[in-house]
Image (cartoon, rainbow, N blue to C red):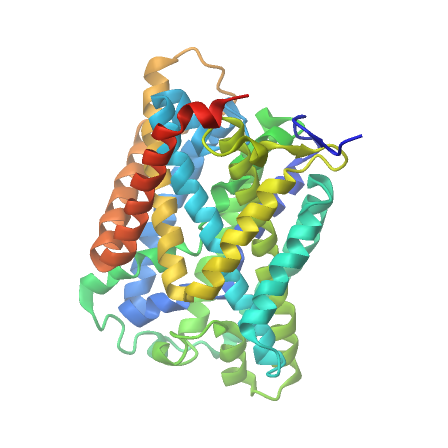
Length: 434
């Protein structure tokens, strides 16, 4: 008998699993990537950028939760935009989300390779990164409950490690060091740093991708989101501030392992704590890498099921009830990005996809409030319409900044959207053929 079927996904996830997925998706952003923001803005400039982005994410998540609990489908933003605007809205949201979740894993894989190379210089960064794809796609193929349990364990370890890091480094914090050359590029630097501040929280919305696999979506999703964002705000601000008071920001602004490097400055490169942290730092990176693989596979699955991608990508394995072809296809794209891209470029493209998705999701929230006022809404966005409006305005600000400071990468992103739109329009009948 064939192992493949179009059966639905398995409903097994509880609030603790969603918290772990929410935090796990993002927590690598506390380990690396954000420090590139110092290179364009300095410490105080980046702190301002981070506070702006923190307000964006708090207002966005509280608004986005209304959509996720009202329409608990694996497509997440694609499903909301499709319901609000029809096929073209679903196409834009699906493309933007797919770019975010396909492009974020290569950046994390780069960091996994860099951390491993820091510990074992004989190992190639690229070879380690490619091996990570093979290993974690294999784990995800085994089933969502097994994947979520793994995420829970690894996320708890990653959070504990960051708390230990803050505890070790905080006593060595120097205010004078933090405010040395604080905004070398002025306010333009603040705007240039926005995509790197987004990296602190990017992909938390991926919880929506597993909404169909949640036991009680009315209650569970909101708890997972809210506790997740609160955890991440504390960790992001804590890690960034204490690290900025250790050494001049330029020392750490161009590497993929800023936290072990900071510990080496504080404790010495030969200190056992430094090596232990570099080893344990892999937990946070693994948690996010694993979580984003879950996210991209569910997005590909949802788009294929709706006819935006070839139908075979929406097939679910009968034994494990996982979208195995979607997992493999996304992995192939990620490995190609690993070979062709650089960490800072990958972060910018992922942030661009995220911001476009945030904007269309917030507009969809407003439209659905008008079109379907009687829709069952288990969670109501607080302070409506102000929270979604703030999220929309700040997202638009981030979009303008990303496009202005990264015109060529942005051009590639929007050309990709046009190409995908053209292909879907031309082949719509083919893709939707049963």
